Amino acid sequence: MIKLAPSILAADFARLLEDVKKVENAGCEYLHIDVMDGHFVPNITLGPAIVKSLRKDVGMVFDAHLMIENPDNYIKEFVDAGCDLIVVHEEACRHLHRTIQNIKSYKVKAGVALNPATPVETIKHILKDLDMVLIMTVNPGFGGQSFIESMIPKIEELKNMIESQNLNVDIQVDGGIKPENVDKVVKAGANVIVAGSAIFNSDNINETIKQFRKNADL
Ligand code: DX5
Ligand code: ZN
Image (cartoon, rainbow, N blue to C red):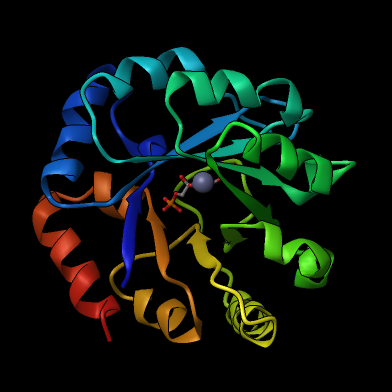
């Protein structure tokens, strides 16, 4: 079953709740929350205070994509703000296994994101501890970038690795995903689909979400 995770990076921050309600009412399962610190990536977005405000009115799964240095220092704050799933970057964690255990100690789900140049091999030995792996299909930092085609075999490689270890780990893809290319990533093995600009910049959000589902549920 494919899950859609609209990224609020492309929403109107002055009308954030209004925009989030649109995707919740359209049946999207996850809310993808892009947290950027201006260090790990060259952009700054939002923190736990905004997550906490949204939590009061939104029932979706809150999926925090932490593009920040020293994520361990902020995990508790994001859990307390209401996140259900915390994703950290492999490249930002010196002791990734420890960070994952830290996330799980709060009884929320844990994921690891891999930049385009980071091999899936780097998480092979901690795969069984993860609920989700996020394959970045653009370099993190900005919305509206083009999908990197060479990430398709990487998704397949991860899928094979998960199957060969007999695990049940979600594969999320993030960056440049649109109704026109979602079939490719799903065929390769992805089941949690992030989309920012394709959804929030659409003139008809409901119709775009329908297109995503139609093209993704192969
Ligand atoms: C990029 C973010 C993405 C971004 C995706 O660093 O992690 O979640 O919002 O935006 P689109 O779908 O526009 O590429
Ligand atoms: Zn993201």
